[in-house]
Length: 205
Image (cartoon, rainbow, N blue to C red):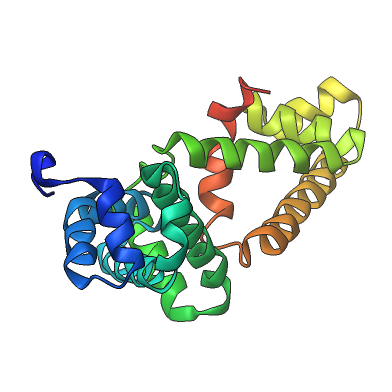
């Protein structure tokens, strides 16, 4: 990060908008670590995070003419970084290489949901998907996932067969998988960690 005494953001943004490469370099040095650490929380792969950080700053250069209108640059940059990371997770469903890379580092870094904004996004996703389930499937899913009850326990509590419980769980998981594929472009990078988050999220519902 650059020396804050030498860093005048408004002047740098104006200079960058005019095509000043030195201003661009100063902005890059000041914020690169912040950007790379943020996207790493999403994709978990240091290699992908470095590539994403480079892509984000390329976008900043390409959109430099819009920067003077940005009143608060850091929130603007963080939102751009977050969007780029989420787009990468969505694209993971279309690229076997990216899927393998994300999956490999997810197992190495289980703290996938440390970022509060990401937690909020996934909790909202879980809430929407739960609300879309048929009432009985939702009830069965909550008992199995939130309360960690066995199929036999749920069957006894609801007065239905074990096979019925299983069928409701299959239906619920299929709905989650379909919703994840629609919203995120592929379930591998999000479905398993999403369901792992479920119990900690349920207290927020």
